[in-house]
Picture 1 (cartoon, helix red, strand yellow):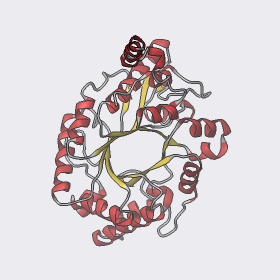
Picture 2 (cartoon, one colour):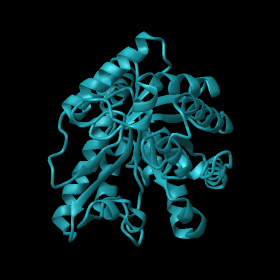
Picture 3 (cartoon, one colour):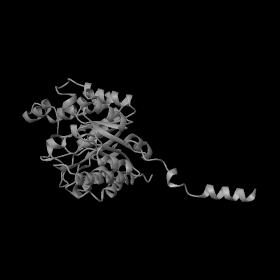
Picture 4 (cartoon, one colour):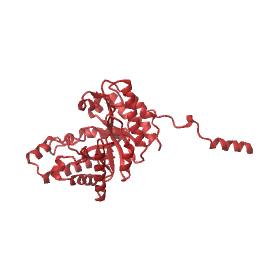
Length: 346
């Protein structure tokens, strides 16, 4: 019996053959479970309601969702004191039914503000003290409504300019830089369990923006302000180099004790589409996921829309498009398959 025991021990000690390793994921939801991060998308609410094929792919593929526009201030309070929650509620309810977590986007931004607010500030009928109260009430009302239903909030969005100065907005001009700390404190008070993020674009590579944002986070932390995460939007263009130091930048924020998220990933191209461009795009998506997986604190990768049918890119970048994982007909592009091929080091 002794030779048999030795032989059995040798078999058990041998490395598993390649075919014994976990199989490749079938879809993005399975990839999320295997890799241990949430994989999400921004959601077009009209498409969610009205397009069965869109809804099917959304609920099959993603474990995390963000309202593309439905939670922005002009959407939820188009008239002062008159709230329209139907679109945001639709997103949250659909997420609950389909096992998805939700990112709230966004509480404080300089864009997509309601006309009553910007006009009142411009003509002087809303003074600075009242403006601060309005901001506090907006944050408190929205966060309380979804208390326990929102995993993370983009509390302040795009507060740093490309040159590293603080962005000139009605909030900075009228309330001073303290509005940022106030926003985090008010949001935390309204839902102490939600993760609270600072979110910005070009934070992947722009050195002045990176340094100012790091300094801002450190200042907030030193003052005891509840800030839990940093969001990298990740709006990339394949005509530009991939931000090759992105993982190291993530680590600098993670070293401050922050959770990291890629919040708005896409990779646009100059049209027309070619196979070569699609393959380049695929490498940008796979590298972004690889970078996230290489940083233990990176817990989420969200794309800013999953189908070219409803992409924001053509409306903002003349002559560019095809930025998403699925085409207009919801066919999977090489970028989708490239994501499934990424193997997690975790």
